[in-house]
Image (cartoon, rainbow, N blue to C red; front, top):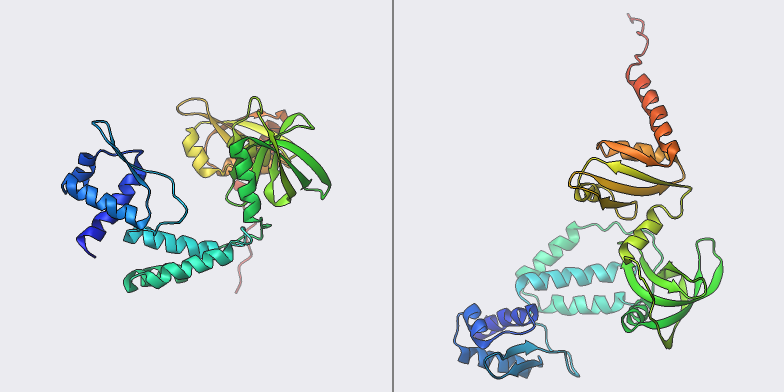
Length: 327
């Protein structure tokens, strides 16, 4: 690799890391003169990167949005391997129907230009990795992009929705945020017909149509928490609140956000909210955390803990009858 190419690989990430840089700052980072920085900026422009310059003492260089064509990617070795692995994973992921072919083409293009030693690294990681892909319904990438755009532009949305029971309905909403749980995409929106905030699974949304009307939903919730509460306790018979004697970050690392909502109430305590159709299952899951806890609600959870504790204590002190000796 030439010195110029190496500097460009170092210069481009710097320009993306901050809104603007002074020429002397870039020169110091790259270990060159400001004159060399100006020449390298000109080379980036020739490649299609829109680098803007502002004169004066407070001026500098800033990387602007792209123009009519996509400039070539300048990647260092670690970035190239990460992109190649990400594209291979996207090509094999059924969650985004319609984008797999494009990801496969991009992965093939990246593989073709990778140096042999980097290609061997990518192939080794690919062969050694076995994905555990859940059988989840897929969504159209265009639908995902369309919903994201209505959230960004505050535009009302209409769509047909199929709930968990298979019932269809027409919805008119003010979209707010998209939430990804690692398995599914959810839209948090204000339902204009029902007058309340709701979350909608994107794979159950069809005939998605922006209306062109502006939306200004009042008092939007914390989108991630809203979805987490809906998944962890909303669908279940019992909703439990439990005080745990451990920091919130410790408990959150042990309990997925789709299972419970964890809220800090002090340095060494947190409040856990979860749900289940069985109080026994809640009690047993809490016991498995191996953290002292105090059931707050429902009242029956404390009683079930006492019953289970008695059963486990009896089992721990029960010994099998002595077996007869065998000749």
